Image: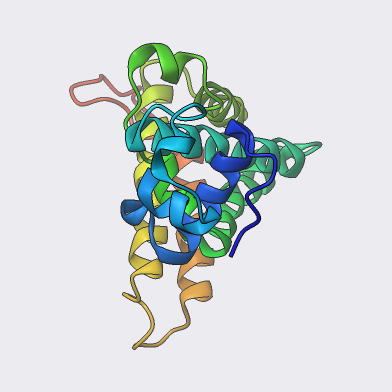
Length: 199
Protein backbone atom coordinates (compact mmCIF):
# COMPACT_ATOMS: atom_id res chain seq x y z
CA UNK A 1 0.00 0.00 0.00
CA UNK A 2 1.39 3.44 -0.93
CA UNK A 3 1.43 6.07 1.80
CA UNK A 4 -1.28 8.69 1.40
CA UNK A 5 0.52 11.56 3.15
CA UNK A 6 1.39 14.58 1.01
CA UNK A 7 -0.54 13.80 -2.16
CA UNK A 8 0.40 16.12 -5.01
CA UNK A 9 -0.20 16.10 -8.74
CA UNK A 10 3.44 15.16 -9.35
CA UNK A 11 3.33 12.32 -6.83
CA UNK A 12 0.10 10.99 -8.28
CA UNK A 13 1.54 11.16 -11.80
CA UNK A 14 4.63 9.20 -10.81
CA UNK A 15 2.52 6.67 -8.94
CA UNK A 16 0.34 6.37 -12.03
CA UNK A 17 3.45 5.76 -14.14
CA UNK A 18 4.58 3.01 -11.77
CA UNK A 19 1.11 1.50 -11.93
CA UNK A 20 1.23 1.60 -15.73
CA UNK A 21 4.50 -0.35 -15.69
CA UNK A 22 2.99 -2.93 -13.34
CA UNK A 23 -0.46 -3.53 -14.84
CA UNK A 24 -0.43 -1.81 -18.24
CA UNK A 25 -1.19 1.73 -19.30
CA UNK A 26 -4.75 0.87 -20.34
CA UNK A 27 -5.54 -0.19 -16.77
CA UNK A 28 -4.54 3.14 -15.22
CA UNK A 29 -7.54 5.05 -13.84
CA UNK A 30 -8.15 7.49 -11.01
CA UNK A 31 -10.03 4.71 -9.22
CA UNK A 32 -7.06 2.35 -9.47
CA UNK A 33 -4.77 5.08 -8.19
CA UNK A 34 -7.12 5.79 -5.27
CA UNK A 35 -6.95 2.13 -4.29
CA UNK A 36 -3.17 2.32 -4.43
CA UNK A 37 -3.18 5.17 -1.91
CA UNK A 38 -6.12 3.78 0.08
CA UNK A 39 -8.11 6.98 -0.33
CA UNK A 40 -11.50 7.86 -1.77
CA UNK A 41 -11.59 8.64 -5.47
CA UNK A 42 -13.07 12.08 -4.81
CA UNK A 43 -10.00 13.08 -2.83
CA UNK A 44 -7.83 12.84 -5.95
CA UNK A 45 -9.91 15.15 -8.10
CA UNK A 46 -8.28 18.22 -6.56
CA UNK A 47 -5.03 17.02 -8.16
CA UNK A 48 -6.16 15.38 -11.44
CA UNK A 49 -9.32 16.13 -13.39
CA UNK A 50 -10.12 12.59 -14.48
CA UNK A 51 -8.49 9.42 -15.79
CA UNK A 52 -7.74 11.01 -19.16
CA UNK A 53 -5.95 13.90 -17.45
CA UNK A 54 -3.95 11.40 -15.40
CA UNK A 55 -2.98 9.45 -18.52
CA UNK A 56 -1.94 12.64 -20.29
CA UNK A 57 0.30 13.58 -17.37
CA UNK A 58 1.90 10.12 -17.42
CA UNK A 59 2.47 10.49 -21.17
CA UNK A 60 4.17 13.85 -20.65
CA UNK A 61 6.35 12.39 -17.89
CA UNK A 62 7.39 9.49 -20.14
CA UNK A 63 8.24 11.81 -23.03
CA UNK A 64 10.33 13.97 -20.68
CA UNK A 65 12.19 10.99 -19.25
CA UNK A 66 12.98 9.58 -22.68
CA UNK A 67 14.07 12.97 -24.01
CA UNK A 68 16.46 13.43 -21.08
CA UNK A 69 17.94 9.97 -21.66
CA UNK A 70 18.28 10.59 -25.38
CA UNK A 71 19.98 13.95 -24.90
CA UNK A 72 22.52 12.38 -22.55
CA UNK A 73 23.10 9.44 -24.92
CA UNK A 74 23.62 11.67 -27.97
CA UNK A 75 26.17 14.00 -26.38
CA UNK A 76 29.32 13.99 -28.50
CA UNK A 77 27.98 11.45 -31.01
CA UNK A 78 27.19 11.74 -34.71
CA UNK A 79 26.33 9.52 -37.66
CA UNK A 80 25.80 5.84 -36.93
CA UNK A 81 26.95 6.22 -33.33
CA UNK A 82 24.22 8.79 -32.72
CA UNK A 83 21.60 6.74 -34.56
CA UNK A 84 22.44 3.64 -32.50
CA UNK A 85 22.50 5.51 -29.19
CA UNK A 86 19.16 7.17 -29.96
CA UNK A 87 17.52 3.89 -30.98
CA UNK A 88 18.82 2.10 -27.89
CA UNK A 89 17.30 4.73 -25.62
CA UNK A 90 13.84 3.93 -26.96
CA UNK A 91 14.34 0.18 -26.79
CA UNK A 92 15.86 0.21 -23.31
CA UNK A 93 13.20 2.55 -21.95
CA UNK A 94 10.42 0.39 -23.36
CA UNK A 95 11.90 -2.73 -21.78
CA UNK A 96 12.40 -1.07 -18.40
CA UNK A 97 9.11 0.85 -18.39
CA UNK A 98 6.61 -0.82 -20.73
CA UNK A 99 3.64 1.06 -19.31
CA UNK A 100 5.31 4.44 -19.58
CA UNK A 101 6.49 3.64 -23.08
CA UNK A 102 2.88 2.87 -24.03
CA UNK A 103 1.87 6.16 -22.43
CA UNK A 104 4.34 8.03 -24.62
CA UNK A 105 2.33 6.88 -27.66
CA UNK A 106 -0.84 8.57 -26.36
CA UNK A 107 -2.28 11.01 -28.86
CA UNK A 108 -2.09 14.51 -27.38
CA UNK A 109 -4.07 17.55 -28.44
CA UNK A 110 -2.02 19.99 -30.57
CA UNK A 111 -1.46 22.54 -27.79
CA UNK A 112 -0.31 19.92 -25.27
CA UNK A 113 1.89 18.21 -27.85
CA UNK A 114 3.55 21.50 -28.80
CA UNK A 115 4.47 22.13 -25.15
CA UNK A 116 5.65 18.56 -24.52
CA UNK A 117 9.08 16.95 -24.70
CA UNK A 118 7.90 15.36 -27.94
CA UNK A 119 9.29 18.49 -29.61
CA UNK A 120 12.74 17.64 -28.22
CA UNK A 121 12.45 14.11 -29.63
CA UNK A 122 11.75 15.52 -33.09
CA UNK A 123 14.61 18.01 -32.82
CA UNK A 124 17.07 15.30 -31.81
CA UNK A 125 15.92 13.02 -34.63
CA UNK A 126 16.41 15.78 -37.17
CA UNK A 127 19.83 16.63 -35.73
CA UNK A 128 20.89 13.00 -36.30
CA UNK A 129 19.57 13.10 -39.86
CA UNK A 130 21.43 16.30 -40.66
CA UNK A 131 24.56 14.25 -40.09
CA UNK A 132 23.46 12.18 -43.08
CA UNK A 133 23.03 15.32 -45.22
CA UNK A 134 19.29 14.79 -45.64
CA UNK A 135 17.21 17.84 -46.53
CA UNK A 136 13.48 18.32 -46.82
CA UNK A 137 11.24 16.62 -47.69
CA UNK A 138 13.49 13.57 -47.37
CA UNK A 139 14.32 14.46 -43.77
CA UNK A 140 10.66 14.23 -42.80
CA UNK A 141 10.32 10.93 -44.67
CA UNK A 142 13.31 9.62 -42.72
CA UNK A 143 11.90 10.85 -39.38
CA UNK A 144 8.73 8.89 -40.05
CA UNK A 145 10.67 5.83 -41.16
CA UNK A 146 12.85 5.77 -38.03
CA UNK A 147 9.87 6.24 -35.74
CA UNK A 148 8.01 3.42 -37.47
CA UNK A 149 10.95 1.02 -37.34
CA UNK A 150 11.87 1.76 -33.71
CA UNK A 151 8.31 1.55 -32.44
CA UNK A 152 7.40 -1.45 -34.57
CA UNK A 153 10.44 -3.47 -33.51
CA UNK A 154 10.10 -2.58 -29.83
CA UNK A 155 6.36 -3.34 -29.80
CA UNK A 156 6.85 -6.75 -31.42
CA UNK A 157 9.70 -7.54 -29.08
CA UNK A 158 7.73 -6.56 -25.98
CA UNK A 159 4.86 -8.71 -27.18
CA UNK A 160 7.14 -11.75 -27.36
CA UNK A 161 7.20 -11.81 -31.14
CA UNK A 162 10.90 -12.65 -31.33
CA UNK A 163 11.25 -14.97 -28.33
CA UNK A 164 10.67 -18.30 -29.98
CA UNK A 165 13.06 -18.29 -32.92
CA UNK A 166 16.72 -17.82 -33.78
CA UNK A 167 18.73 -15.68 -34.19
CA UNK A 168 18.61 -13.71 -30.95
CA UNK A 169 16.58 -10.50 -30.96
CA UNK A 170 19.67 -8.44 -30.14
CA UNK A 171 21.36 -9.67 -33.30
CA UNK A 172 18.36 -8.69 -35.39
CA UNK A 173 18.22 -5.29 -33.69
CA UNK A 174 21.89 -4.64 -34.50
CA UNK A 175 21.36 -5.70 -38.10
CA UNK A 176 18.30 -3.46 -38.35
CA UNK A 177 20.33 -0.46 -37.21
CA UNK A 178 23.08 -1.37 -39.70
CA UNK A 179 20.48 -1.43 -42.47
CA UNK A 180 19.01 1.92 -41.42
CA UNK A 181 22.47 3.49 -41.38
CA UNK A 182 23.21 2.13 -44.86
CA UNK A 183 19.89 3.40 -46.19
CA UNK A 184 20.39 6.87 -44.71
CA UNK A 185 23.86 7.06 -46.26
CA UNK A 186 22.44 6.10 -49.67
CA UNK A 187 19.02 7.70 -49.56
CA UNK A 188 17.14 6.96 -52.78
CA UNK A 189 16.26 9.77 -55.14
CA UNK A 190 12.55 10.56 -55.55
CA UNK A 191 10.76 8.77 -58.40
CA UNK A 192 11.19 10.33 -61.84
CA UNK A 193 14.31 12.20 -60.74
CA UNK A 194 16.78 12.44 -63.65
CA UNK A 195 20.05 10.67 -62.94
CA UNK A 196 23.43 12.08 -63.92
CA UNK A 197 24.93 10.00 -66.74
CA UNK A 198 28.31 8.41 -66.03
CA UNK A 199 31.08 7.41 -68.40
